[in-house]
Image (tube, rainbow, N blue to C red; front, side):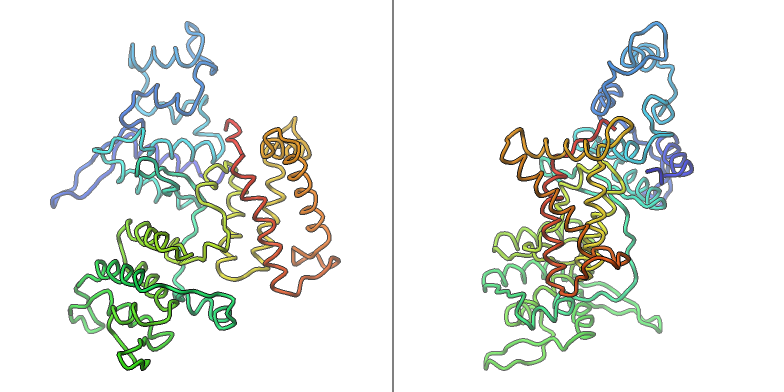
Length: 432
């Protein structure tokens, strides 16, 4: 895939070559950051490339490593950021996957210089990439530091935010979703939210400045959907604007609403991991992701596993399937997931590897040379292919068996997802 334009690549090169303007202490100044961070340039490149097997552009040397050492260490006559335009590294004319993998390595905790301006350069790089539909994001942690991966950029829309209890009202009413939150956990959640219940100054339509709190804003937003209430000492269900009472003496689903609205107002990167830690500690089967709580029983693609997917089309389909599933649009979610399944089969395809050989490689890697597992995964690939051929997974396929029961879509989605989410953990980078 080649979405990243030469304009974006030129701007990112210019960013690292010429620096970034920042506002600091009431003045604007230009700061710089080495793409190889705290490492020597050759050491950084060896994390991504086998330099000893790459050709030399200098006839005096046998390989790229000797060539690069001569011209960056011994003589230092290569221009700064030469690697971005060196054809051996495929950053200028290669695939998006190669380019994005390189940029993610620039911000790896083993590489980046923590006392430098790496965060500012990450933000600036992301703004440029988002113009072409990608973003670099914290995909996992190592030694409590963010390790970055890349994904398709899904721009936030301006539609009304609908809290958990309202998004899932039908299933809650039908008791398909059941939840209990113990008093101890409620106290922890309240104490956590209270830390983020800051006082700040807002401006009304007339230009009048006034003080308000995050909790006041949260209650105002909740009132768009229902009257916030709690049980008082007399066991009466009464209206409230008290955060503690709302959290401690209310429906557990209202507690989830409060968490989501606080997340919406928080500007801290720590909010999501900290509330997830509280939920996990108290065995509450929910996880906050991008401002929305999801039931962890509804298996989705693990974001750490998604990092290993080095093919843009497959990653995009998996993200779209997950998005539609979260929105309860199961028909489109299943369609996108089945498209991802077909794309997965071609992951290793090349001029010498056809679709059948590609699938066989995936199965061999998944099976770890154990015959029972090889047979298991081969059977599952075969049966899912038959399902896709016999049932109307895609809405335009009118000659196949129609799917009319929403629960059948749920079955198809989770069965296909189970195989895909396992398979992508065994994918290699294909030496991109």
